[in-house]
Length: 133
Image (cartoon, rainbow, N blue to C red; front, top):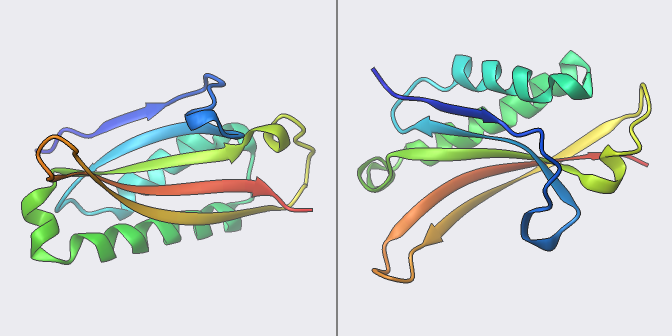
């Protein structure tokens, strides 16, 4: 059995001095089936935004495809215990949300390296949501 850490962060903090508001972070253990875990977490995390199901499905599919692609190399399975999935929304636009406004998103995959031992220590998929227009 894997320990899955799911957090939904509703606090309005501003990561790294940017205009992006973190909506939540999910730790997906390497080697675990991603579909159900990611879908469940994304629905809970993005529920306050009242997104259309087709858009939510696109975000989930994108995150799942990235997770599957990341987990394929043997090196990743050996060096990492989990993948972080972080979801952000643009802070200024998030605060001006209007009903039926179209959303867009982009995804970034990050691999971080520890400066202490020059070992890879963070693997993350970050999804950034924004209001179009």
